[in-house]
Length: 503
Image 1: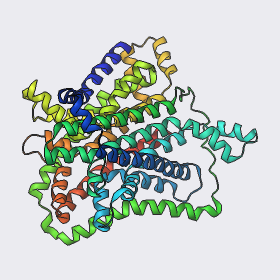
Image 2: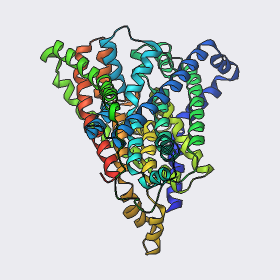
Image 3: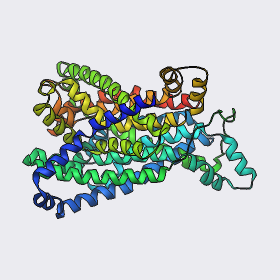
Image 4: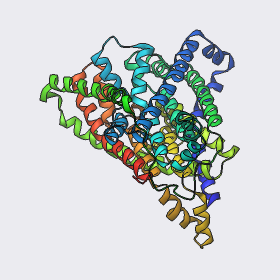
């Protein structure tokens, strides 16, 4: 079975490298002199500074907030811990550009790096909270008890025993947040903060300067390479699975005492900022627009097409991600890291670059695929593969390989072992990967606009069209429906993360 999965991983990687190949092809066609003049200029330095500063500030902020909230909801005697845990995941139901729309509508003067940092952290910290809280629930408390028995105080036990076991979850979540920051467009466009992605799309839309935009995309790929190297270095090669389930008892919850009120204030403040502000903004615009903004002859088809694209695109994404995630855990090595890194590279590219690559290939090589639903779903798979890989990788890492070896000894074929043992143990990760990919597809903008067949309109593209015209009231129903559509997916992510821990 390993050769089959390895071959599938190589094939998927070759397909995902098509957008990068497109960028490099444009660079070669442009020539070194022109390409260097487009890269080594003050504007690129400004964009590099903005993007780097945003990532360096937002990723640690997301990690710190996620770690504190996960510890409070999973390891302390916080009142209503399960409710707060759900509220920590719920911001995933609000697309990042809807968060930005809500804040800009409420505070029109909010823009620049502080606005980008605020909205980014509120939109993306759940990507780190989910894996960290799930990992905390699965940890064997006996390890912490042993460290405490040796005289280590609670703070040292947490630092030396708990945090190292959260490394895979923290690294995976940080990488996912970093890739989102590199590729995000709508959030930063609304708050007027220039990054490589906003500059690339502005370049295409305003001047149709393909070489200039492609050179910016090439620098963005180099940023992604640095992020991948950092994640791989920090993650290391340690194993995180065990054959037994550890102690049956749950870990003892720490008493907060006089810290209870500050902890509740922190969680309440995060919930108000990440959920209350969008809710208030939508309520204001829906009330102002009245019944006239509910144009069901437009909303109905957009909702149906969004559902079809999200379901089919997520299924294709997870199917493509499984061989790579399996290799990452079961066959780690240089080749595996190269294949995995290549797939993350495409995830860092803006949707407009992925779309242009697929348009070029479709027109020049496979014309019948131009402006078809398959091309749109292929773009989704290329863009959201990192989400699916990370969701699957964490689940496979906690599925002991010894159980697969035992199934082989008992006479099961490799294919049957994969279906009945590996996939069964990794089922929570599969469900989480499907939900993560669907969440991304529902809120995808640029690739859908460029690749979808004529007449196709999703909730996201309709929302962007109205908000671009500053008709915030007409855009509100589409934002509300996106949130209602993705809320069950966030609930599924939360439920599966708890089920994985037997809770």
